[in-house]
Image 1 (cartoon, rainbow, N blue to C red):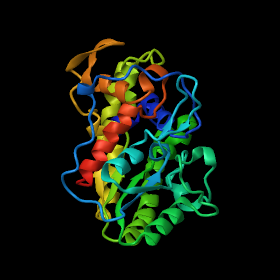
Image 2: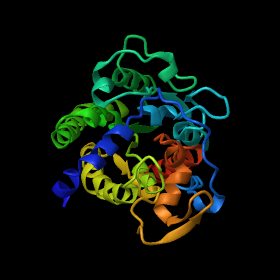
Image 3: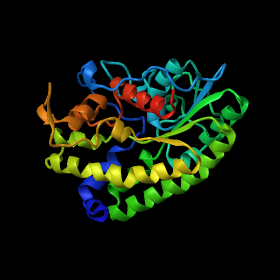
Length: 313
């Protein structure tokens, strides 16, 4: 089944093009916020307790930094609506966000520095350090006080495949590179973090939004095919690497409703009767109306809920 899905060049091109969390794109205002009953919210703190003077280290790309497109005249950029800020607020931990919009699994290891625009609000300047080195330094400086590490990376690795001559080969090689880089990155983070919980994340299936997007004439078919791409290909690779270092994998794709049946419909205020997973991705990301892959504030709420649940906070 996987080989058959991956040979559909349009959906693979869609996948690799839209998972580019570069932090450099802009979009019109966000779609109407969903009702409170339709959006997952962060659970109350009932499990693990943050250490005294606890520190939370956030690692990754524009999802980690809280990037959002331009909205109501405000410039595009990282905001404090991001899931990392929400998790820090709800656990009472001090956030050290070393994420960098546009990061790939390779640049996280090898590329020094991060432009100010691509950093999270209030994030430290990494100077000449790579993101991995900056994360390790933060973890070692706060030994005994680290209460959580989150990692969200991999979307940008797939970007070049959007224009590749052989999309299938490019995508397969990109996922193999993500796997190899995670295999090098995660043990380093684990050693520096000690026994602190590490949570690895994936992404919402924004491609479900093709169901209602005028930009994709065959959008319903593309939306259907996106589900196994996440469920059976990309996410299992990520999960396997996180498990090797005793990290918890937060399946954000599942947490945002992507695996629910597409045969069950709900009434969307903008698009009428649509499958429930489509309505959810329209509410939780900027994709359906503006073809932007980044989470809305409600989307970051849902991701924060997944992180807190995975870390047992």
